[in-house]
Amino acid sequence: EAVDILDQTLSMPQIKPLEKAKSKLTRADIYLMENDIWEASLTYSQVEKEFKNDVVGSEAKFKNAMLSYYNGDFTWAASQFDVLRSSTTKLIANDAMQYSILISDNIDEDSSYNGLTYFSKAEFALYQNKYSLALQYLDTLNQNYLSHPLFDEVLYKRAEIAIKENQYQKADSLLNQILLKYPDDIMADDALYLLAQLYETHLNSTQKAKEYYERIILDYSNSLYVTEARKRYNELTNKSSEPQSPKFSNDIVN
Image (tube, rainbow, N blue to C red; front, side):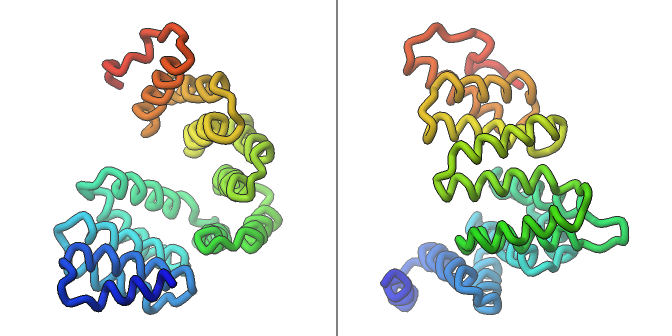
Protein backbone atom coordinates (compact mmCIF):
# COMPACT_ATOMS: atom_id res chain seq x y z
CA GLU A 1 0.00 0.00 0.00
CA ALA A 2 1.20 3.52 -0.81
CA VAL A 3 1.02 4.72 2.80
CA ASP A 4 3.16 1.78 3.96
CA ILE A 5 5.77 2.53 1.30
CA LEU A 6 5.77 6.19 2.33
CA ASP A 7 6.20 5.30 6.02
CA GLN A 8 9.07 2.96 5.12
CA THR A 9 10.71 5.73 3.12
CA LEU A 10 10.45 8.13 6.07
CA SER A 11 12.11 5.59 8.37
CA MET A 12 15.13 5.11 6.08
CA PRO A 13 18.24 6.54 7.80
CA GLN A 14 19.96 7.42 4.51
CA ILE A 15 17.13 9.57 3.13
CA LYS A 16 18.22 13.14 2.36
CA PRO A 17 16.65 15.86 4.55
CA LEU A 18 14.88 17.62 1.67
CA GLU A 19 13.47 14.37 0.29
CA LYS A 20 12.33 13.42 3.78
CA ALA A 21 10.59 16.80 4.15
CA LYS A 22 8.74 16.34 0.86
CA SER A 23 7.69 12.84 1.89
CA LYS A 24 6.47 14.19 5.23
CA LEU A 25 4.32 16.74 3.40
CA THR A 26 2.77 13.95 1.37
CA ARG A 27 2.16 11.98 4.58
CA ALA A 28 0.54 15.03 6.17
CA ASP A 29 -1.70 15.41 3.13
CA ILE A 30 -2.85 11.83 3.67
CA TYR A 31 -3.50 12.50 7.35
CA LEU A 32 -5.69 15.43 6.27
CA MET A 33 -7.50 13.27 3.72
CA GLU A 34 -8.20 10.81 6.54
CA ASN A 35 -9.47 13.62 8.80
CA ASP A 36 -6.57 13.28 11.23
CA ILE A 37 -6.26 17.04 11.74
CA TRP A 38 -3.84 16.84 14.66
CA GLU A 39 -1.25 14.64 12.96
CA ALA A 40 -1.53 16.63 9.73
CA SER A 41 -0.91 19.94 11.50
CA LEU A 42 1.92 18.50 13.58
CA THR A 43 3.68 17.14 10.49
CA TYR A 44 3.25 20.35 8.48
CA SER A 45 4.62 22.33 11.45
CA GLN A 46 7.68 20.07 11.70
CA VAL A 47 8.55 20.64 8.04
CA GLU A 48 7.93 24.38 8.33
CA LYS A 49 10.22 24.63 11.35
CA GLU A 50 12.99 22.54 9.78
CA PHE A 51 12.95 24.40 6.44
CA LYS A 52 12.02 27.97 7.34
CA ASN A 53 14.04 29.50 4.50
CA ASP A 54 13.24 26.92 1.85
CA VAL A 55 10.39 26.52 -0.62
CA VAL A 56 9.28 23.30 1.07
CA GLY A 57 8.97 25.24 4.34
CA SER A 58 6.72 27.82 2.68
CA GLU A 59 4.65 25.03 1.18
CA ALA A 60 4.26 23.46 4.64
CA LYS A 61 3.23 26.82 6.11
CA PHE A 62 0.64 27.28 3.36
CA LYS A 63 -0.77 23.80 3.85
CA ASN A 64 -1.03 24.42 7.59
CA ALA A 65 -2.84 27.70 6.91
CA MET A 66 -5.25 25.84 4.64
CA LEU A 67 -5.86 23.32 7.41
CA SER A 68 -6.80 26.20 9.74
CA TYR A 69 -9.05 27.59 7.02
CA TYR A 70 -10.78 24.23 6.56
CA ASN A 71 -11.18 24.03 10.33
CA GLY A 72 -12.89 27.43 10.53
CA ASP A 73 -10.02 29.25 12.27
CA PHE A 74 -10.16 32.11 9.77
CA THR A 75 -8.34 34.77 11.80
CA TRP A 76 -5.26 32.59 12.26
CA ALA A 77 -5.40 31.35 8.67
CA ALA A 78 -5.58 34.93 7.36
CA SER A 79 -2.54 35.95 9.42
CA GLN A 80 -0.55 33.09 7.89
CA PHE A 81 -1.75 33.83 4.36
CA ASP A 82 -0.73 37.46 4.81
CA VAL A 83 2.81 36.39 5.71
CA LEU A 84 2.95 34.05 2.71
CA ARG A 85 1.90 36.79 0.28
CA SER A 86 5.57 37.82 0.23
CA SER A 87 6.73 34.27 -0.48
CA THR A 88 9.48 33.94 -3.07
CA THR A 89 7.43 31.18 -4.68
CA LYS A 90 4.97 32.86 -7.04
CA LEU A 91 2.36 30.09 -6.88
CA ILE A 92 2.29 30.06 -3.08
CA ALA A 93 2.22 33.88 -2.94
CA ASN A 94 -0.69 34.04 -5.40
CA ASP A 95 -2.69 31.34 -3.60
CA ALA A 96 -2.02 32.99 -0.24
CA MET A 97 -3.21 36.33 -1.59
CA GLN A 98 -6.36 34.70 -2.97
CA TYR A 99 -7.29 33.17 0.38
CA SER A 100 -6.35 36.27 2.35
CA ILE A 101 -8.74 38.30 0.19
CA LEU A 102 -11.40 35.56 0.36
CA ILE A 103 -11.41 35.72 4.15
CA SER A 104 -11.31 39.52 4.44
CA ASP A 105 -14.08 39.96 1.85
CA ASN A 106 -16.49 37.51 3.47
CA ILE A 107 -17.14 38.69 7.00
CA ASP A 108 -20.92 38.70 7.45
CA GLU A 109 -22.83 41.78 8.60
CA ASP A 110 -22.82 40.48 12.19
CA SER A 111 -18.98 40.13 12.04
CA SER A 112 -19.27 36.34 11.83
CA TYR A 113 -18.01 34.00 9.15
CA ASN A 114 -21.13 31.84 8.84
CA GLY A 115 -21.23 31.92 5.04
CA LEU A 116 -17.50 31.32 4.75
CA THR A 117 -17.78 28.43 7.21
CA TYR A 118 -20.13 26.57 4.86
CA PHE A 119 -17.84 27.36 1.94
CA SER A 120 -14.64 26.22 3.70
CA LYS A 121 -16.36 23.00 4.76
CA ALA A 122 -17.34 22.47 1.12
CA GLU A 123 -13.75 23.01 0.03
CA PHE A 124 -12.51 20.54 2.64
CA ALA A 125 -15.05 17.95 1.51
CA LEU A 126 -13.90 18.51 -2.08
CA TYR A 127 -10.27 18.09 -0.96
CA GLN A 128 -11.30 14.73 0.51
CA ASN A 129 -13.13 13.80 -2.72
CA LYS A 130 -16.50 13.83 -0.92
CA TYR A 131 -18.40 15.52 -3.72
CA SER A 132 -21.94 14.95 -2.43
CA LEU A 133 -21.02 16.40 0.96
CA ALA A 134 -19.37 19.40 -0.67
CA LEU A 135 -22.53 20.09 -2.67
CA GLN A 136 -24.63 19.83 0.51
CA TYR A 137 -22.58 22.60 2.15
CA LEU A 138 -22.84 24.76 -0.97
CA ASP A 139 -26.61 24.17 -1.09
CA THR A 140 -26.89 25.24 2.55
CA LEU A 141 -24.99 28.45 1.83
CA ASN A 142 -27.29 29.26 -1.10
CA GLN A 143 -30.39 28.47 0.95
CA ASN A 144 -29.38 30.58 3.95
CA TYR A 145 -28.62 33.80 2.05
CA LEU A 146 -30.61 35.75 -0.52
CA SER A 147 -27.30 37.11 -1.72
CA HIS A 148 -23.71 36.73 -0.59
CA PRO A 149 -20.28 37.79 -1.93
CA LEU A 150 -19.41 34.08 -2.14
CA PHE A 151 -22.05 33.21 -4.71
CA ASP A 152 -19.63 33.47 -7.66
CA GLU A 153 -17.15 31.24 -5.79
CA VAL A 154 -19.99 28.79 -5.12
CA LEU A 155 -20.74 28.53 -8.84
CA TYR A 156 -17.06 28.00 -9.58
CA LYS A 157 -16.78 25.29 -6.93
CA ARG A 158 -19.86 23.56 -8.36
CA ALA A 159 -18.21 23.65 -11.78
CA GLU A 160 -15.04 22.06 -10.38
CA ILE A 161 -17.12 19.26 -8.88
CA ALA A 162 -19.01 18.79 -12.16
CA ILE A 163 -15.70 18.39 -14.01
CA LYS A 164 -14.47 15.82 -11.47
CA GLU A 165 -17.72 13.91 -12.05
CA ASN A 166 -17.27 14.16 -15.86
CA GLN A 167 -20.34 16.42 -16.20
CA TYR A 168 -18.67 18.76 -18.66
CA GLN A 169 -21.75 20.44 -20.14
CA LYS A 170 -22.98 21.19 -16.63
CA ALA A 171 -19.61 22.73 -15.79
CA ASP A 172 -19.82 24.85 -18.96
CA SER A 173 -23.24 26.15 -17.89
CA LEU A 174 -22.11 26.96 -14.33
CA LEU A 175 -19.01 28.82 -15.47
CA ASN A 176 -20.98 30.85 -18.00
CA GLN A 177 -23.36 31.85 -15.20
CA ILE A 178 -20.37 33.49 -13.49
CA LEU A 179 -19.57 35.45 -16.65
CA LEU A 180 -23.20 36.49 -17.04
CA LYS A 181 -23.97 37.40 -13.42
CA TYR A 182 -20.57 38.42 -12.04
CA PRO A 183 -18.40 39.69 -14.93
CA ASP A 184 -16.62 42.22 -12.70
CA ASP A 185 -16.05 39.96 -9.70
CA ILE A 186 -12.86 38.17 -8.72
CA MET A 187 -13.80 34.79 -10.24
CA ALA A 188 -14.53 36.00 -13.79
CA ASP A 189 -11.04 35.39 -15.18
CA ASP A 190 -10.84 32.07 -13.30
CA ALA A 191 -14.09 31.05 -14.98
CA LEU A 192 -12.77 32.02 -18.42
CA TYR A 193 -9.55 30.09 -17.90
CA LEU A 194 -11.34 26.98 -16.67
CA LEU A 195 -13.74 27.21 -19.63
CA ALA A 196 -10.79 27.39 -22.02
CA GLN A 197 -9.23 24.36 -20.34
CA LEU A 198 -12.56 22.55 -20.44
CA TYR A 199 -12.96 23.05 -24.19
CA GLU A 200 -9.33 22.28 -24.90
CA THR A 201 -9.20 19.11 -22.79
CA HIS A 202 -12.69 17.63 -22.57
CA LEU A 203 -15.12 19.24 -25.02
CA ASN A 204 -12.67 19.11 -27.94
CA SER A 205 -13.21 22.54 -29.43
CA THR A 206 -9.97 24.36 -30.17
CA GLN A 207 -11.90 27.35 -31.50
CA LYS A 208 -13.95 27.76 -28.33
CA ALA A 209 -10.85 27.34 -26.17
CA LYS A 210 -9.11 30.08 -28.15
CA GLU A 211 -12.10 32.38 -27.76
CA TYR A 212 -11.97 32.07 -23.97
CA TYR A 213 -8.19 32.55 -23.86
CA GLU A 214 -8.64 35.60 -26.08
CA ARG A 215 -11.21 37.09 -23.71
CA ILE A 216 -8.74 36.80 -20.83
CA ILE A 217 -6.07 38.58 -22.87
CA LEU A 218 -8.34 41.38 -24.07
CA ASP A 219 -10.82 41.86 -21.22
CA TYR A 220 -8.80 40.93 -18.13
CA SER A 221 -5.33 42.25 -18.93
CA ASN A 222 -4.33 42.31 -15.24
CA SER A 223 -5.26 38.68 -14.71
CA LEU A 224 -2.66 36.24 -13.43
CA TYR A 225 -3.74 33.98 -16.32
CA VAL A 226 -2.76 36.38 -19.12
CA THR A 227 0.72 34.95 -19.74
CA GLU A 228 -0.50 31.35 -19.82
CA ALA A 229 -3.59 32.32 -21.86
CA ARG A 230 -1.39 33.97 -24.49
CA LYS A 231 0.89 30.94 -24.56
CA ARG A 232 -2.01 28.50 -24.97
CA TYR A 233 -3.68 30.72 -27.60
CA ASN A 234 -0.51 30.81 -29.68
CA GLU A 235 0.10 27.07 -29.35
CA LEU A 236 -3.46 26.28 -30.42
CA THR A 237 -3.18 28.72 -33.32
CA ASN A 238 0.08 27.16 -34.51
CA LYS A 239 -1.36 23.67 -34.13
CA SER A 240 -4.34 24.53 -36.33
CA SER A 241 -2.07 26.29 -38.87
CA GLU A 242 -4.07 29.49 -38.70
CA PRO A 243 -2.41 32.89 -39.06
CA GLN A 244 -1.37 34.19 -35.64
CA SER A 245 -2.73 37.54 -34.58
CA PRO A 246 0.18 39.87 -33.76
CA LYS A 247 -1.71 41.25 -30.75
CA PHE A 248 -1.02 37.97 -28.95
CA SER A 249 2.71 37.95 -29.57
CA ASN A 250 4.69 36.52 -26.70
CA ASP A 251 6.75 39.71 -26.72
CA ILE A 252 3.82 41.75 -25.47
CA VAL A 253 4.31 43.14 -21.99
CA ASN A 254 1.21 43.58 -19.84
